[in-house]
Image (tube, rainbow, N blue to C red; front, side, top):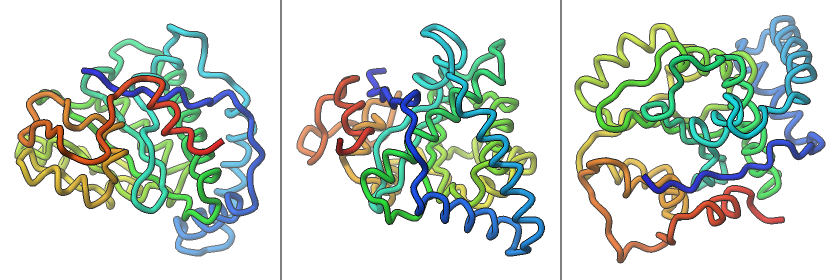
Length: 252
C-alpha cells in the first residue's frame, strides 16, 4: 500500500499554549464528572507522567518506538473542524514481539505532534482528535497492544478522543468489538463508529473528514475497498511522504 506517512516532527519541543493547558484541565474535569479532587489528582499524575515521558525520544530509525511512530500510528491531517486525525494501522503493523513500552512512546510522540500541529493551525480548536482503526484485509488488531493504547489515551489524554472510526465494520468486526470494548476505556468505547465495508462506507468517512485528509489516510488504496478509486474526486493529490509531512504539519 502506498501511504503518506507523516514525518511529524515529534522531537521538536514546543511550549504548551494557554489554550492547550485549559483544554487539558477541562478534559480532566469532564472525565471525572467534574469532581474537583479526583480531577486535580488525575491532572497532577498526568503532568508528572508528561514530565517523565515527553523528553524521551521514540528511538533511532529501525527501533520499536520509531517504527510505531512512522508505521503503526501516524498523523494524517485534520477533520472538518481542525482536529488532528490519526491512523492506527494495526492489521499490518501491530507488533508481535516488540517492546510495548517503546511502541507506546512512539504513539505518544505522534499524538503530541498532531495536537501541536492542530494548535498551530487554529489555537481555538477544541483539543480533540479523530482516530481511525484500520483492520485491513479482514485481520484483527493486536488486542493487547490496542488495549494498552486505549488505556494510555484514557489515562493521559482524557476527553480528547472525539471519534474512533473502525474499518471495516463487518459483522465479524462488530462481534469482536462488542466483546473487546468491554476491556477498553470508555474514552474510546463510547465514541466508536463501525464503518461498513460497503460503497456507502466512504460517505461515513466523508462526514468526518475532508477529501484532503481522506487522501492522506489513503482510503481509496486500502485493500479491496468497495468504493474503488475515483480520479475525478476533488482533493486527491498523489500520495507521497513529502506531501504527507507538509499536510500533517500544517502552516509554518
